Length: 177
Image (cartoon, rainbow, N blue to C red; front, side, top):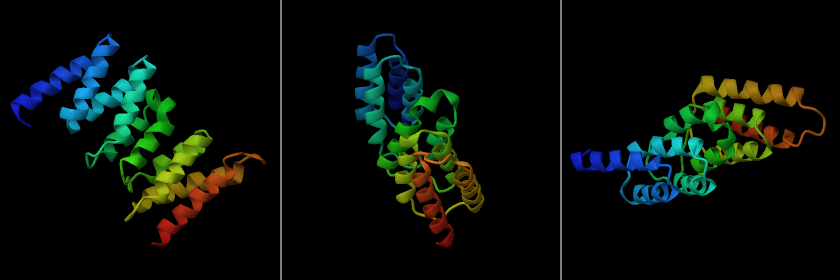
């Protein structure tokens, strides 16, 4: 990274956490034009810490169009933090729409599906349906355990049961691949 890009990034990072939404939105617009992978983490942090719904909508829009490779690790790290819990559905959707392929973290998504709401489970299913291996065997086994336990313990009429069964079928197919 050049010295000039470093200066631009530092300025944008400061603007992202301004108390003035106009400044924040302008910084987000600039990041869309001039940003790089170093800016993804601060943008994710803004999602969790901004009180402005407009800012959050812009952030989610940018994250869903993210075309920077190898960002799965950062998303996995953030999605497991409590402060990102309200955004699980949106973050999984962003990962899918950005073409991420987090094959080493299947257990994270199985946990999100069984612990989260119906829409989060649906987004997890969509992400898994579009993943390509090879898959981490230990993570796959942990994911199987999560969904199996859910199916065994689910209350009759649980709205997620069919989704979780579909996730189980996908995990089974991954194991066979």
